[in-house]
Length: 117
Image (tube, rainbow, N blue to C red):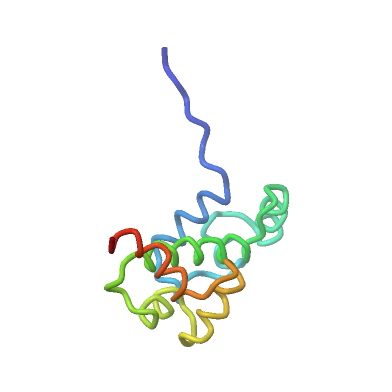
């Protein structure tokens, strides 16, 4: 039997594309649409149909990457903020608190505490 895999969803393809770039080089929706060979309005419509606007995909990916990097005590908060394209550490702290309800320092302590025991 030959098994066929469904092609990845548009939001998944976008996340994969964004992961391949530094956050400060993430394209705006018009540039992304050109990269995907579609109009900006088609991109917005298809993402709306998938229930994931472009900004939500970017924010979700930033949160995902932040939580990955916070698990590594060798990566400073400043470096994480820079990697994610934030203007400063304070902006990163505010965004992380908005996403998770806790600040990055508290999150890092929670996930690294079991490893320290």
